[in-house]
Image 1 (cartoon, protein in one colour):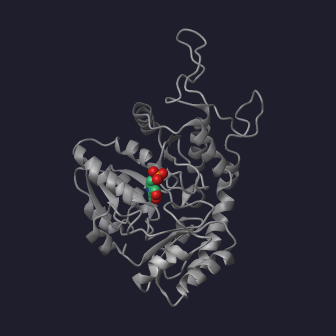
Image 2: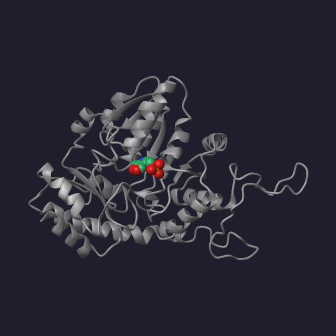
Image 3: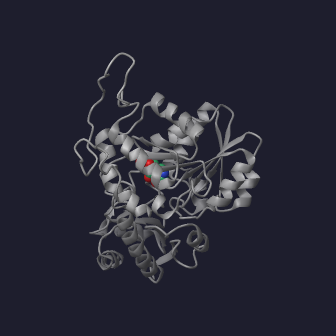
Length: 377
Ligand SMILES: Cc1ncc(COP(=O)(O)O)c(C=O)c1O
């Protein structure tokens, strides 16, 4: 069954008693025990809540894993997964990484004796060379934030499996609709569900999906012990958003392609990073391993003095931090999403004072292009 069909049906008729078509919100902290030592299957909402469970089962099905987990944010999900590692463990990480993930690893987990090496994970040799005897994990963004580099998930997963390394794929930018990391051999997929999954810029959430049962049990233990779970109402919002995942992404990537081509031809724009463009270094690989190129674009303006007026002059496109929603947003990664990355690393990667990131929404594309055109004038 297609992912878009499965997504549209999440939570359908879950409540057999009433036949409710959509998933009810079980806004309760606790559940009455039928008797001593007996349970309805639900005891306390941190340990399990029907609305959250419908979301967790839904995302697990879309991603082809045994179990899904919903958290209060994408960062809470990543934090929970990092707790699978032990003192002294080393992880290899995508160097062009969401700034909040970098901050979590460098400023928090490094204090607990985990160490991280950042490499270009679109270069399989660089990943292989970074492996040490104490390497226990690979954390890779399937499409990187913000420069949209493409990692070969199948080959990376194979490499990890052969060396006993746990592979975790942050698939936020692509979602299971476009790419399924677990089907390609990865152990865990993780998402900022705030983005494309929820899709409406109205809730902060995170999800993870685990491929195998034994590992899923460990993750469940951590989720329940740490407790950064997603509340019932937010779970419901993510379910509702996910129902339209397919149609939103179809439109977003159709719009993104046209905008990327328009930007590419604009005299005030330098490099355009969009994997749908045939000259993008990851174009052929993403075409092979994914269903589409996604709705994110990064681009450099030729002169840094153009940035400020551009951010202030767009009318339809909002200058705001986040991505993946139905409304188009423009972001300045150097001072927003990636501010916590060391300046010398940012410069080397190309996250500079001329780079902007667009999260393309579902608006009519000519309106978006018109808005960018007037902002450039
Ligand atoms: C690729 C990626 N992963 C994780 C996160 C963190 O998610 P959240 O903001 O939901 O905590 C983000 C947020 O922008 C992101 O872009």
